[in-house]
Length: 189
Image 1 (cartoon, rainbow, N blue to C red):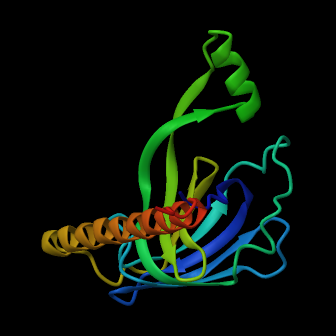
Image 2 (image 1 turned 180 degrees about the vertical axis):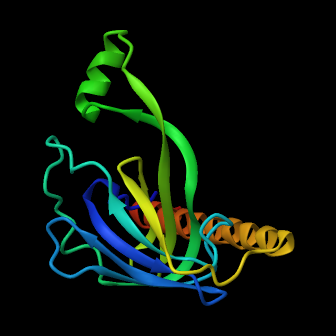
């Protein structure tokens, strides 16, 4: 499970020029204050060492409704980094999810193109796992690259990312188990 506000991202900026830290902000549609990220860890090799802007390449689709996340998502998104990359290539659909489902259910092909996708994942102490994945967002690198990850550092960051998702999934499983245990009737022998 993850909170996925990708369709509502207007703009942002992340800075991974200090090794081991990724900090910045992300502005969401319908929310006055941007999210403030302070994450332990580095971006993937394509963005590691860079400060970069997040820009919307397509307008927010007309079928997207203003979200009701405002009371849920916290401004402070401190935590640990997951995967952050601009190098993913995914299928891009030029229709709403409802139209996509209707066409697929009717056995029709949905027109697609291949596009680069921005993928931002982090594990917030306030909101858990957050994932932004969108073909409607891109990055613009700023200034000079501060560092490049070595092969060993890339492997170590991938190991840490795997540990974070495993830890998060264990927390979800523990929560669900606790909820099931409290919902079961007591055994009265």
